[in-house]
Image (cartoon, rainbow, N blue to C red; front, side, top):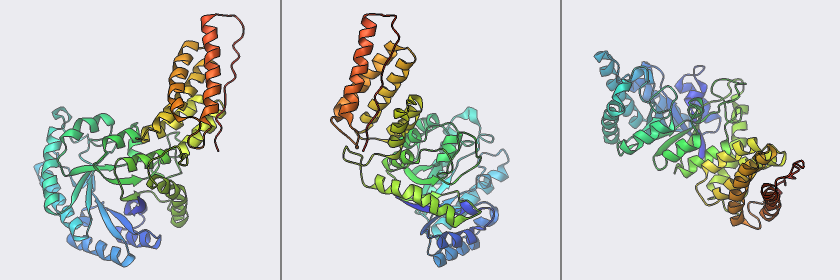
Length: 393
């Protein structure tokens, strides 16, 4: 995987042609062309964008459609006819400039006959897939909070019925805005992920709108691993650039994401690997006694992982939750979680990912034994449990 850039990151300050020039100046070699107006759908407009990209040394891999130009379910038949004409123009234009994929966000829920289920949408997808394949183009449907595919349930329902040539475009911002777990969405997209976007979301509400990666709260270590595990190996399209200083913004994004991409591309995580960033942060929270926050952090990595190492993550999570229950006086709940966590942790002794798993196992087992004694011989003595910390290189 590597980082590309979308012209969307510069709109509306720069036209698509000017944005492609800026993308080349910033050192990107691959781009996504986002269409916004009917004038962007003409043969001349595509030809000009293709020329600008070649001059800038940039390959346009993806063409992203404007939803309002493709109202395929509008009650006005003239609007529907125009929508299909625009589809054909976009597909022809994408082929003209050498793009591999066209992204459509699907119909807006406000225009779609929801009571009809997914059948009308699928009919359109089958026809679009046919037209795209005839032009040598792939069609990708994007998860978007106000469109048809926004939640895991949507993807689980439509996924088995998708036309053979249709895949997905993943948007982490849209997933977070819809309250969907990005890693679970990516698990559902596995094997059919054609495109992926990079922009952040602030779940704490301190900053609004689309943000460059690192300016929000999304767990990028887990997201990039989940994208990789979904079978994607193309350019990750940066969709948000801080316009006050694009060069500094892009440099910050590269400094954050490129080391993660290198770690992900190195292969599956095994005991001798470097621990992912989310696990390290989770361990810091664990050692501070912030077990709930630790659970939230490491859970992202657990969802993103597909290998055996996810059992180690879950073991640490369960031990932390067990300590959380114990500190609140719920000894029976603590006992169940600690027993399960120790069972999983025991598969990774004496050490893994730089963690002294043997020491954590021994000290956590002592806490469990103390809890067992208290449950078998109730006492009024104050509950004093000393929880261990996790030692990591």
